[in-house]
Image 1 (tube, rainbow over the protein chains, first blue to last red):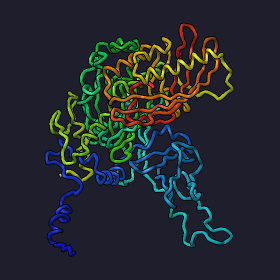
Image 2: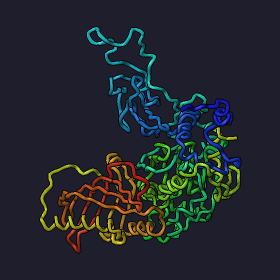
Image 3: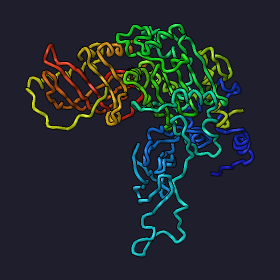
Amino acid sequence: MAVVHDCTNFDEAGVPERASRADPLVRWPEEGVTRVPFQVFSDPAIYAAEQRKIFRGPVWHYLCLETEVSKSGDIRTGWIGETPIIVTRDADGALHAMVNRCAHKGALVCLKDKDNRQSLTCVYHAWNYALDGRLKSVAFQRGIKGRGGMPEDFDLAKHRLQPIRVESFCGIVFGTFSDETPPVEQYLGDRIAAFLRRNMDHPLKVLGTHSQMIHNNWKLYAENVRDSYHATLLHTFYTTFKVNRLDMDGGIVLSDRKWHHISYSKRATLDAAAEYTTANVHSAQYDSQLAAPELLDAWDGFDDQITHSIQTIFPTLVIQLTLNSLAVRFFVPRGVDKTELYWIFLGYETDTPEQERMRVMQANLTGAAGLVALEDGCINSFVQRGTVGSPDHAAFIEMGGKTAESNESSRATEASVRGFWHGYRDIMGFAS
Amino acid sequence: VSALPVEPRTVQPVAADVRDAVEDLLTGYTHVLDDGRVDEWASLFEKDAIYQVTTRENVEAGRPVGIVLCIGRPMMEDRIKALKLANIFESHVFRHVVGRPLIEPAGSDRYRVRSSFVIYRTMFTGRTDVFATGRYDDLITGPGDGFRFAERIAVLDSRVIDTLMVYPI
């Protein structure tokens, strides 16, 4: 049996057509950022391209908190996307980051979340590295009894753990694979950097950590955390218990490239401020039908009336300050439809015991069992499961308009979600 | 409030009737939850009792924040009211399997109790997974008008919660 291929037809049917488009991976609807093709949540090829263009691209990534590597010899492991990484502080106090992958065979070098050592040794063949990632020694480099060993031209200086550019800002250690990423403060922009300073530029104390495995693509959580539209619709704890938050609607601030955002709400009753100042700590500041309203005991940490805020830093970092509950959240893609969401609850070293107690109680509001927001653990998997069979359909995102601009008068908008897709399309080369 | 790790030690024997009462409380607790009788849950605690779910990692680091913390029965009742009226999640049930407890007197009518647990979660889809493994570190009072928890700290072996935690464990 003979099969005849008509080469001309074959080419016209597929290859040149795909290759001639701006990007062959996805056909983005022409409406732009108000539509998101569902394909981007479940296509392994897009997931792989994200690892290259975003996670190994010109982007700063959360690595760890400085307080986790405060002493010389401290070691913290983590991830940038799917790449395992190591953060260290050397004997001179300098921070370093590198890929957790031995220069020999590629095995993990550090096998713990955290450690304290003078150097790093791969357990496989005992290759030994300085805390800055330079290769110091190779076992049996000159062989045993004159036999074996590395070739004459083997040069220790030509091998090392792959370095990652590192920069610390407001107690957060950021890392990037790219030399082109601008300095962190410039990457964030003025408004985003200033707000990060407000919340994080204090001596930080870790009060507790845990993580959540959520069964959805990482971008669904990135959207969800920018989505101020869903807050009072999906999360009904405050309304169920008639918690009078005395808050007026706040606003949305987007960074210049629309990658990062701040969503905030303010307390409306300014005339109560004097009373709050004298009391300093207010029991039951929030009227409610809770049997134990002391769960919401709070104090005014700042003088700008902002009581609730969520700040995102593209791609996978979130800082929340809801009442006094300060937390860093970061999420790590664990496959195209799985994401690990980390929670680090924080206080300041300067907190009084009473303030720390209030932060501890308010930690009940968020996290894997958060009274106010535990729904976010499952809602994104509903979208994942709803969309997996419909790659050619798209989400409709027009609440609050069709553009992605700051809006400091209303949070009934999906502007920050459109902002995320604006930034995503830009860096992925999916913008038309 | 922090759950300090309990040091391994020689356990003094307690009277058989105390052991029976403590084991009945532990077993009754698991059936209250596994039967879905969440309204009865708080009644197994003293009025000012502490209930916490945390992780081994937090306990070892001496960190006060875990995953759930209730101080007093009213706070527990708020959690139950929240899960019945406010929280949204996919229907599921738990099955607790609890090992034989170590029991040690801790003052008059108070006992330090430690037990291991495995909790399976079965979703409405029929899928069953191990949801959590760990230990309960309890302070139990009795006999009085019945044995109750003055403190129940569930220390999870893993730092990772699958999806979310809404029911007490």
